[in-house]
Figure 1 (cartoon, rainbow, N blue to C red):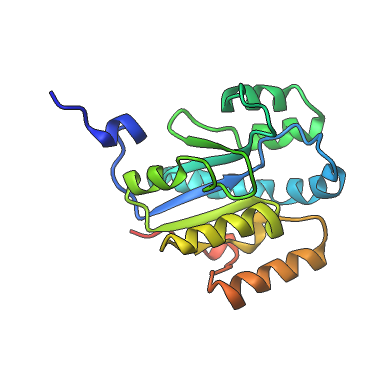
Figure 2: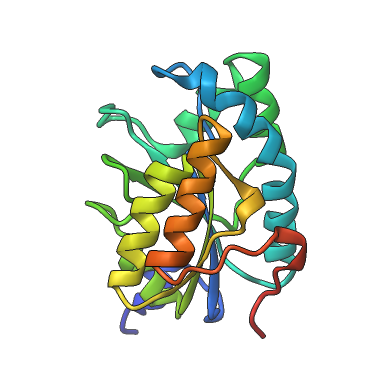
Length: 196
């Protein structure tokens, strides 16, 4: 029997027009400037968790994108375990956003989840046309990933209350960049609907 690319790359899941991407939320939060970002990440965590639950209920793939932080021998399961051994805040976020066995992940060396990762191939295999991006930081990894997704012809949505950065002014500037320059929708997560 010939191998099936769909099964070997993404597993036996039906094609979905949407995918949910959670960026850099599974973390030990021990990097420079984490203290400024962490309270805002905690604030958006419950809404990201609800969006993950809704995605799974609609058979929408959930993908975690995380920095490898130069640890080339690490893997995602190790990162989850380390975050659960971290601070109270790190454990709170990871418990709320705990990946399921059906979810996917990519480890990224730079800001964009597309750069030097298999994310594009995964999305193509899953039949994704719209990428919904959540996580941190809005004006860094979320923005770079959204730009790369648009360059690859994907529709992009960034629910405005499911991403965070270091302060309110930076958040507002980033959201304006999404809408004004990238034509990216930024609805509130409660108003967002998955494609059928």
